[in-house]
Image (cartoon, rainbow, N blue to C red; front, side, top):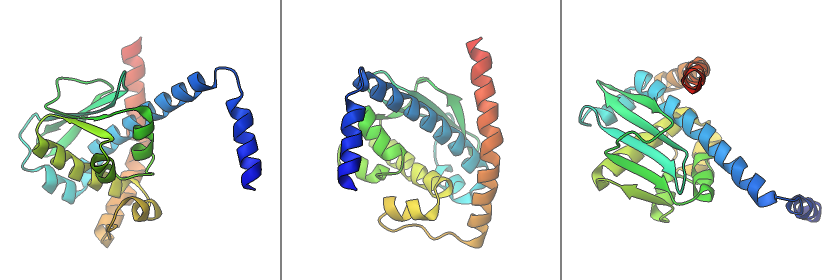
Amino acid sequence: MDFIIEKGLAQLRGIPFYPVIQSRSKYELMDMTLTVIGVAFEEVSKRAPDLKQEISNWNEGRRCSLGVLPKGPYITLEKRGDRIHYLGKKMIDPHMTFIFKNLDSAVLVLTAQMSAHQALAESRILLDGQVSYGMELNRALAIVETYLFPQFILNKIFKRPPTLSIYQLAAKGIIYAAMGPALLKNGLKCAIKKQ
């Protein structure tokens, strides 16, 4: 079986312009994934008391960005009131930025093959800004991942996977239901801005 897979991959790599196609595919995957994470931050901050508690001591107007070197994609999040708002697909004057060193590192973390904690420990992510802000964003990202990913993925990316109460499981279901319309609304907003 492994031989068949290796042979297929060798044929795939023989396609002309394969590195360009591969790089562009990773870029588009990261662009889409970062958008989902931005919208998820907004939806989870509306409905999850544990994220509201985590961000309660953040100063008003704190902006955090996530992105990939060298040319993006990027997203920016801002704390307003007791919520986090997704500002869009660009870096807008952030106070703190998580920057993945390359697309490969971003793919590992954002497709849940590796936790953000492990990526930080392995220096796959650069932190531009105060370390305390970075630690707070990393904890908030872990909470968002808890509500975004199913349990079998959480078991893989967390050393001690979180156990959710009945209330948290109900909130997770509501967040899943809200993600579709929120992504559609965000997609329409981006399409209108491009015109």
